[in-house]
Amino acid sequence: MDVLGFRDHSVYKGHQIFLYKRAQIFAADLYGAFKGQGYGEFNDISSITIFADYIVPAMLWKLGVLKYSSALASIIESNKEIASGSEEEVELRACSIYAVEKMRDLISVKLGKQVWWS
Image 1 (cartoon, rainbow, N blue to C red):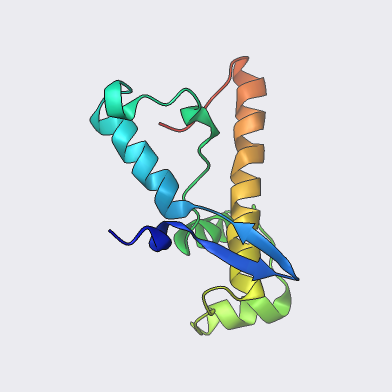
Image 2 (cartoon, helix red, strand yellow):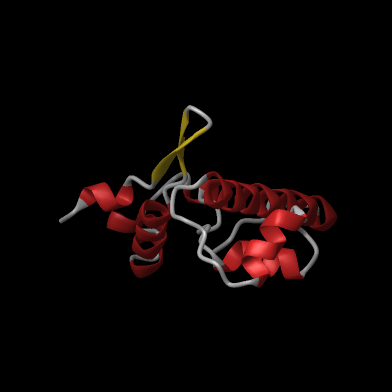
């Protein structure tokens, strides 16, 4: 098993940034498959974030949640690939996680109870 594929990190402005998309998907899959019992029992399952990939930032942009610089918008609109691990890619993924976490906080306040993605 290639566990390095679960590492999901990049260097951003001299700092290592860990997003752990695959590891979180694995934990969520175990939780779902075992219905939160046995191998799927995680006391901190609510700390899992969204699985930030290229789709989430695109949707958040289309919905007006994220605003892009004109340079980044131009790259995206011309369907140019954003390199994996690049500053732009790390920013898109990290800002998507942050935005969805803020949305979750607002929904929790509105509903009067903690909300997490299942």
